[in-house]
Amino acid sequence: MQSEVNQEENLNRIITVPNLLSFFRLCLIPVIIWSYCVKKNPLLAGEILLLSGLTDLADGYIARRFHRISNLGKILDPVADKLTQAAMLICLFTRFPHMLLLIVIMAGKELYMVVSGCLVIRKTGKVHGADWHGKIVTFLLYGTAAVHIIWFQITPMVSDLLIGLCTIMMVISVALYIIQNTRTLKGETV
Image (cartoon, rainbow, N blue to C red; front, side):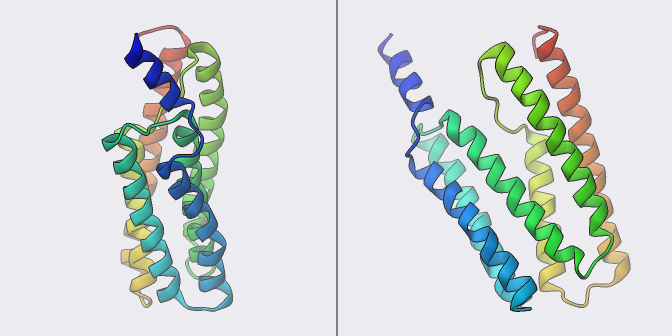
């Protein structure tokens, strides 16, 4: 009984180190955009993106290792991820027009995730975190962005290959989330 109370208290916490790290990542987004688009310094933008990625890893590790997973964190962490990814893709779109494909798919995926996620929360009362395929998409998006930032004169073939790989994994991830959320909403065990 006592551990259930402690677990419920942890889930309802707002100020935790992981949540502060997620908030810090949100604050880095305008700095990434400014560095890349205004300052025209892709290397600086890449360094800030790396810092953002490291804080993302740290917040996940701390949340799991020290039992600081919270409902706010389950929402704030992916929001920080998605906004960082969107900002980074929009910055890269200024030089690589094919990034538009990723932006459009990401927008559709996230719109679906918000609507279906709210329905799942209403039905189950639980906030679910990202699944393995969502984490792979995040890794691929950050990797693709990093390569495009570091390799300033990337060849169109390599650029398109990376964008295509991200596109395929994003579509797979959307399909798996649709299956999972549909089953949850139908009351099936997932």
